[in-house]
Length: 352
Image (cartoon, rainbow, N blue to C red; front, side, top):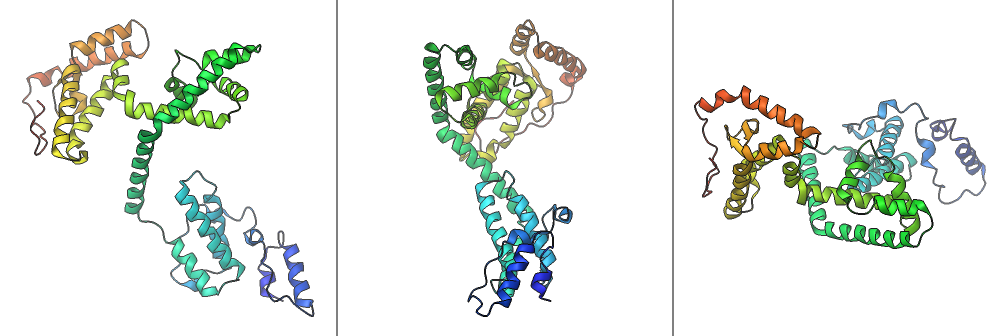
């Protein structure tokens, strides 16, 4: 019996088996063997439990037997369907092609298995961390360079929707224009789309896209990207202040002060940003311990802002209560010996 035929799963390869038998019984076989559908070479469904995680590369080429190649193909095929970066998706496609070539047997056995072995070699943890840092930085750069164009497109969508609603008899169109128009901000909509309480917002987006001939997925992406851009580049610190989130503000500013010397391109830039951070610290905090943001207490100005917020209800009043309790519990720190001050090397100013 042909071992190639025996290796094909019975429940998925009957057609291929028949073709192979027809080829072997023919008096004038074709010069080139037809390429089999390697989907039939996968292990039957339900047998892929062992391939849930990435498989370690085998030490020797002969260990890449048919069973090992099938398991590898199952894993790579599943991984390629996940939400990964375009670069990773391209690599997984090549990885999958390598497994198919090794299973199909069209290429020399040792050469095809050597390619699989090389592509199975995992990236080190350090390499992975460096790559993910690079991806994150490049995403920030994309938002910085092109974020304004996203905002322009959203503003044009809003203007076109208002124009369409003016002449529309459909109440749903007018309602969508109202819900997606000012004074509501795209950042607020992005937060709603990311949360569980979406409400009718998705329906309004779909209505607007239907009128304007836009893909709803594209408009949702625009809103989410614009929201991320504003959180990162415009509103984060201001949002902390306007919402009286003093603990978050203290943690952000304290961390940035500590890391400034490592991330600034030169000492002069570090000194200029240090003055900005010091002005925020002095404007809103009484600092009991320079290096611990939990000991950055809201000063009189911050407490007054919080009291104003508490009149509106919501979290600000609760935060004011927690601030007052925090100040009572840590009042003894005011009379304690001061801790050593953190200083930035080669910087002209110090934070007191």
